Amino acid sequence: MSYDKYVSPLSERYASKEMQYIFSPDMKFKTWRKLWVALAEAERELGLNITEEQIAELKAHMDDINYEVAKEREALVRHDVMSHVYAYGEQCPKAKGIIHLGATSCYVGDNTDVIVMTEALKLVRKKLLNVMAELSKFAMEYRSQPTLAFTHFQPAQPTTVGKRASLWLMELKLDYDDINYLIDSCMLLGSKGTTGTQASFLELFDGDHDKIKKLDQKIAEKMGFRGCYPVSGQTYSRKVDTRVLNVLAGIAASAHKFSNDIRLLQHLKEIEEPFEKNQIGSSAMAYKRNPMRSERIASLANYVMVDALNPAITSATQWFERTLDDSANKRISIPEAFLAVDGILDLYLNVVDGLVVYPKVIEKRLMQELPFMATENIMMDAVKAGGDRQELHEKIRTLSMQAGRNVKEFGLENNLLELIAADPAFNMSLEDLKASMDPAKYTGRAKEQTEEFIRDVIQPILDENKELLGLKADIKV
Image (cartoon, rainbow, N blue to C red):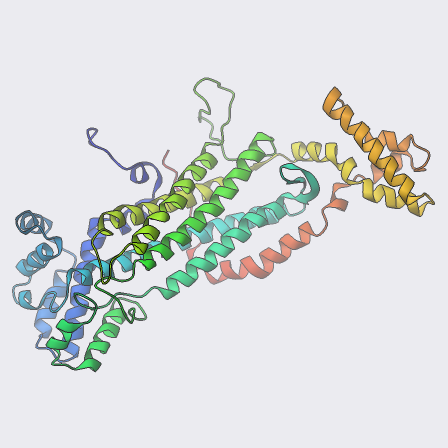
């Protein structure tokens, strides 16, 4: 490893080898050669003077790229595509004259970009599904565990730990819908020529429009796509890049929300992210267990959400049939968004897989607040026993304020039940009141909602994609 030049932390610390390969030069240039083979095959099938021997020669050298020849040539001609055409031709002397026939640089450049992004989206979808699978297990395991819910981070009507997890899972399900739609709608640029008019191919095929339309479709099918965009300039619309990064930003936002909740719950000592035996939480305070993985999720998510602006601005500022001010931006913003989301999902999977729940702490905090939330039920029971609803409402309001003052000003335990038991208007003993303090009575349909959601919505998705499940996150640092 060299220590004298910048190395992207996305590669060194966060992203998987699988995602790094998708955006590697090797993946890129091998895809170029596959596209050149697809073009030659399609042109031969449509009647151009290209032989099977030439195509066989091209196929024989699709993967053994002579990088040094291409590098040396590029230093001379300053053009990456033509340098690789030259290098391919050196290996394929019989096919040399028909490589890249009729095409522009964007034929390999833009089609490869779409292919690479599609492969990367499929890997993101795979990891997203694995996070959903682990989160559904967690939700089901704790579907009945009552916990204090919060609105405005203020104590509110109880829910369950599993129901809260289902909220995280619901957002991932929406992301799953979005990424599926995007993958299904991905199309290639095809062979559109210098301004998208296919003029060079019209010349090649002696003005036969039908053959040119078939050429695009054949190329798409050979590369595993359902078709090509029907119209374009020299490039595919940069709006495509915007759509892709918007979906990635959506996944990042969902993960960020989850990481926020985990960090808050860890502060409350109710739930913790995994903490390894030899892990150091703080260089100064040895007792600390900082939620570093959740913080890293939030940090990477912030980057992705902001990065989504790059293709949006690029798309908005393209001139007519194309300009080249997208190139440098695309080379950075798109790969790094994917590498960051890849790291986010690995972290998400690792955290969910190792979440530690502390039911006693959860129960203690809930029971401190539950008397306030049970007052409506207490009041109704007292009314049934003959009490006056309006009078009882005012009494509960007053007693609640007194109990709240005892807790906040004097640091005492919540004694609301004792105060109510001491008031004859309620005609209820302390034992009766404590008997009504079963948290499960106040969680509504949280348990049932979680079970129904997992059974009816999430499990069918997991069953449909069971061959993609079983990943274990590889966290580097």
